[in-house]
Length: 214
Image (cartoon, rainbow, N blue to C red; front, side):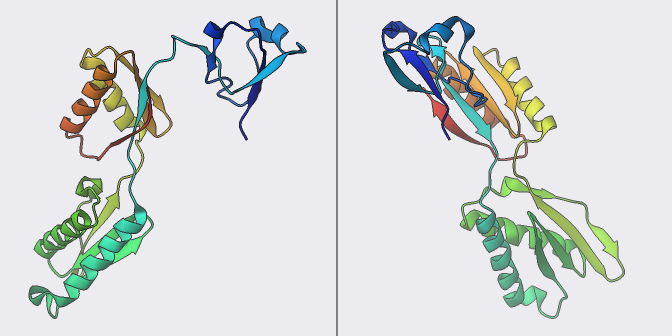
């Protein structure tokens, strides 16, 4: 439900407010409380930053389509079952929440299977950098390896992003907000420069940019 702030209709146009009450508490700045009970009122959606101070921004996120990832894993398993070099080999992709375990009879086969999965992800338009491949484990006659599909920006990665942006000396601000990073700046060119910086950084995880505000 959208929070509403009620301001007197005679409030000067220069005091148009944005982002009022981001915490949905319904609170209005104390200096404007006297506008609330006026007979002549107009409603504004949740907005309270003075016009002219509003800054362009966007969020850095890391999101994946879990259904497409699962489709890629299932397609990789189907290819495995038809591959001549895997005929008679006990090998499989086992899907679990946000990860898959690859199992085979030799460690070199695990790498082949990772390559198969990588190609299937690309065909499903999923960035293969989302794969975090664990170490191979040997148990009895089986080698196995866990592949985790990265989603969300954890605290260490968020700190890396903030430091990268800060070290760039671009005139922007970066703030960690949960599992994403918000970038704010006066100039759109600076924001675009940050996007290019992130794309070229090769941090081992795919990122997307959304929630653009101009």
